[in-house]
Length: 419
Image (cartoon, rainbow, N blue to C red; front, side, top):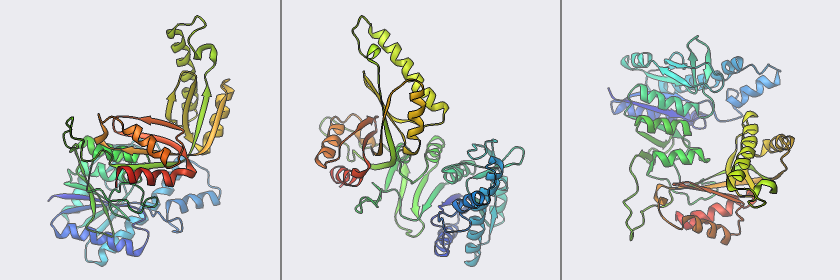
C-alpha cells in the first residue's frame, strides 16, 4: 500500500469545522487506496485552553519552575489533544483512527529538551496501525529520547516530524495542510493580489521559509530536498489549489532570452534593529604606514570580538555588511539593547536603529541576470522607501527598510516583479 503523510497546521485544527475538513482530506486519500498517516499540530488559537500558548500561560500563572523537562512534558499535551480531537472527527465520518504520541509512533530523539533533533524513526508501530486499516494520527513536534523522556522539537517541529515520517515510511508524498491555499508569491495580508504558486523548487521554498514566509519550516524543506521527498502544500479548506515542490530549474537562459520567472516570491521579517559599529580609524583605513594585511588582521580581530561575544550570548545576527570603516548587522529588536551593552562593554561604540523590516526577493531565475539588484533599489526609491542596508546571494536579494514603509515597499516590488 502506498503511503501519504498529511500534516495539519494548528490554525486548521483549532475549530470543529477545521477538524471536519481535515478529516475529509484524510478520507479523500483513503478512498483513493492510500494508507494515510496524519500529523496534528497543537492549536494555533491563543483562546483555546489546550493551545501551546495557553499551556505556557498556565505554567507562568501558577509559578511553575521553567525546568526544560517539565516544560516539554506540559507542551507535549497540546499536540496530543489535537490528535485525539482529529481522531474523533475521523471516527464521525466512518474512518477508524488511533491517536499516538511521538514516542508511540516510534520517534526517537536526542535528549535536548525544547529543541530536540530526531535521531531515528522505527516505522513498525505506524505500519502495524496501517495494516490494521486504521489511520494513525501522530501528535506533532515531539518524540522520546532513548531513555524514554518526552521531548519536543522546537519551532517548526511538526513540519519536520511529518517530513521525517515521510522519509521513514518511504511515503509517496508529504502534504502540508494550512488554513489557506499553497505557497503564495507574497503575504496576502500585505498584497491582496498575491498568487498561489503552482510549482516551486525545494531551494526556493527553503529560502522563502528562512527569510520569513510561514509556509514550511526551513528544517523540513531541507530534509525533504536532502531525501528526495515529494511534497505538496495545500489548503485544508480548498481541495483544488496547491503548490508542488519540484527540483526543476527555470528554463535555460540564453543571451537573448531571460528565464520565464526571475523572481518567485517576496518575504519579509519585522521587529528588527540595525546596529552600526564605527571601525577605529587607527586600523579601519589604510595609510598611516599600515599594510592591507595589517588592516585586514585588525579588522578580523574586531569581527571575531563582535560576533563571538554576541554568539556566546545567544544573539543571532543577520544582514552583515562589512565596509572599510563600518560594520553593520541586524538583530531582533527585543535584544538590541542587550547587544549594544555587550558590545560597549568590549569598548565598541554602537549605534542602534529600531523598527526595521527586512524584505527578501527569492528566485532561481535571477542567477546570472544582471541588473536585478539595481531594479530593486530603483523600485524602492520610486516608492519612497529608503534602503538602509542590502545583502544578496545567487537566488536572494534582501533590503532593510523602516518598518513604517514595509507595506508600500512590498506592494511596489510585487507590482514590478510579480504582476
